[in-house]
Structure formats: C-alpha cells, structure tokens
Amino acid sequence: MQGLTTHKLGCIRGERAVFAGLDLALNPGRAVLLSGPNGSGKSSLLRVLAGLLPPAAGRIDWEGTDIAEDRDGHRARIAYIGHADPLKPALTAAENLTFWARLYGFDPDVEPALFQFSIEALADVPVRYLSAGQRRRVTLARLALGQNSEAGPALWLLDEPATGLDPGAVSMLANTILAHLSNEGVAIISTHGGLLDALLEDSAERFDMREFEA
Amino acid sequence: MIGLTLLVRRELRLAFRGGTDAMMGVIFFVLAAILFPFGVGPDAAILPRIGGGIIWVVALLAALLSLERMFAADHEDGSLDLLYLSPVSLGQLALAKAIAHWLTSGVLLLIASPVLALLYNLPSSAFLPLVATMALGTPTLSLVGAIGAALTLGARRGGVLLALLLLPLYIPVLIFGAGAIDGAIAGRDIAPQLMILGGFLLAALALAPWATAAALRQAIE
Figure 1 (cartoon, rainbow over the protein chains, first blue to last red):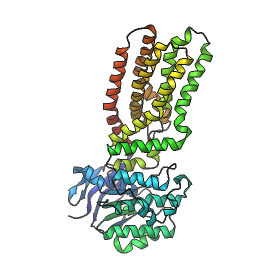
Figure 2 (tube, each protein chain N blue to C red):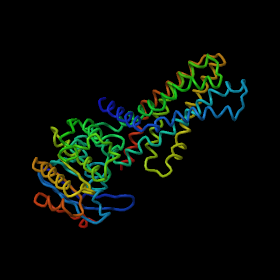
Figure 3 (tube, chains in turn green, red):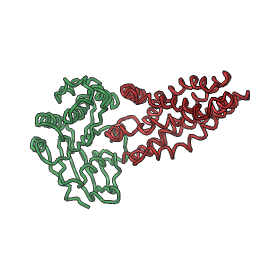
Figure 4 (cartoon, rainbow over the protein chains, first blue to last red):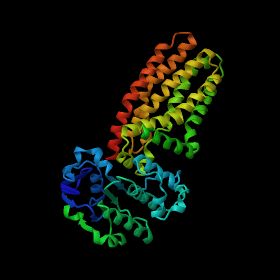
C-alpha cells in the first residue's frame, strides 16, 4: 500500500463530532483538494493527519503502517502550513526562515526559497513591516526549504495556503506544489475554490467534507 | 543538544529585539524594592531586618511578571505547532524556554540584588548569602514557572490564574531564600538552607520540563 490512507477516521472537537467514517486514499504524486463550508472539519482533518490532534476513531496509515506506531517518523515526513503565519515580527524574513530550517535540519541557505516566492528583496526586512500577503509568502517559502533539502517532508498539509496571495503568488505556490507532486510527494490542501484549484486540477482529486458529516 | 542551543539563542534574540520588554522584570524589581522604605519609614533598625524578605518577595513577583508570555506568542502565531512537529522534543523546548527566561530575568535580578541590599543597609555578611540564594533560587522560579505558563495557555485571564497556580509553589523557595539571609545576618550557618534550595533546583530541573511538555501537548490539541 503506497501513500496515505485513512480508515473510518473520526474527530470530536469540544462536545461536537466534526466528521466520522472518513476514508481517504492518496497515491504518491497526487494531491487532494478538500472543500466544504466553514466548520465542516477541513482544518481538523489536517491537524489529525499531522498528528497535532488525536483522532477520536479510526486510523491513519502511511505506506501500510499505522502512524501511531512511529510518531517521530510521521512527524519527520510532514510539512504543515496552518492558518496563522508562524513568524516573529521582530526578526527579518531570512532570520525567521533560517530558524525553521535549522530546527528541522534543512539546508540553512534560505536564498533559493525566498527567490521561489520572489521575496528575495525582503530578506532583511523585519516581518513587522511586511503586508499580510508578503508574510504568507514567507510562510510558504518554508515549503521550498524542505523541497531544496535532502529527505524533505513527503506529506504536505496545507490549510487554505492561498489566503491573502495575489494571482502571481498563487501560481508560484501551485508550481511549488506541482514540483513536490512530480517528486512522488503527497499533498492535502484545503481550499474554497479559486485560482489554486484551477492550476492543480490535473494532479488533484476533489474531496467534499460534507459527505462525512457526523 | 543542538536543538536546545538553537532555541535558547532564538529566545534571547527575540528578547533583545523586544527592547524594554525584557528589562521590565528587573525595572519592576528595583522600583518596588525602592518603594518599601518609603512606606515602612527610614528606621535604620527595621530595614536590615525586613530587607532580605522584601528583596525575595519582589524577585518572586518580578519573575512572575514575564512568565505569562513565555509560550503565548508561539501559541498564537502557530509556532508551537511547528515546534511540536520539529525533531526537538517538547521537553527540550520547555527547558530552553526556562533557560532563556532565567537568562533574561533571573540573572538580571541576581545582578541587581546587591545594589538593593545596600539600599536596605544589610550588613556585608549578608551580601554573599543573598547572591548565593538568588543564584540557586531564581532558576527554580523559571523552571516551575514554565509549568504554570504552559498550563494557562489559551485561558482567559491567564495572568491571574498563573499567579494563583504558581505563588503557592514559589513559597518554599521564598522561605528558604529569605531564611538564609536572616540566618547570615544573625551569624548562623546557612549551609542547610542553601542545600535545600539546591535540592529544589535539581528536582525542578528533572521534573519541570517533563510536566511542562505534558501541559504543552494539551495546549496544542
């Protein structure tokens, strides 16, 4: 069994069941576009898959092995982009990225990653002075860091990654994701439609969270 | 180990760039300690007697002041999720945060305390014990404080809750810290108090990162 599979996955937030009986199968080189209205559990699913949230029911397999058996191994294969931008306002864009690169054991040369999202001119600007879209680009440049390193993460979990991006940046993001997929990577992306969906259409399956409402 | 130094350096850099925020604790420490003599009156007999206790109480409150933000920013901007997903364990993160907190608050309190001892007219025999108890006690405050900071993550009015949680745990450090200074002034042997403070520090070093990691795991969920 290749790639990522889930079996009867369920999730409870607070007292409310968010989704239940969720089966997902994803082969290397393919992406999934998660859709569904607000509160349908897209973010919760991504957090469960990342191991940030324990599932209330079911299990997750990577290449046929339950991820619960090898938590450290599972963490090492994940690149997670959440809603917030995990950047420190007082540090420059390059300093923020270098910290994450060092911590994750990636190549600490962040220049190519900044270039990939055409923010190389902002390398030495404190993140405090960047616009929301520019911050998002710096956050996304983290994906490129792993990609440019040996043994980078294979499983990308992106929670509405295109929020706040201009069309140019969305196509940079799409190209980064496509390069990841052509490298036998796997990506699960929550979206509300738009340009990113259109650009990824040929390499991605659609997955509607409404089918698994609990 | 590489992860630990990386995290401590990041915290120090952030504290340094933050400017006055990092200095707030020590400024509070000095100002509050200066205010007491105005309230108590300039009686040369009273000040040395209460000085050791006041310096320790104010140091406790100063340490508490900067604790609330220990994990809060990382929790709000999603950095905590990424720190959890990184190869560095939450226990190492907790230890790194406590070390950084001590370097930016405890060490400054340690340096400022002899100046305050002068202000309270403490006898010169009490200076070394004061610095020694501070050196042994303030790291314990940072380590135990990390548990409270992690437990109150995401809570509303976290600051009040933090004080309620931590002050009872800080009292033993206060008793033996202030007790050692009183003992030194009275000319008694203070080795037992110092050894007990050292014992607290070792226990906190072994247990606090582990407890903090468990609390952080809850906050991430």
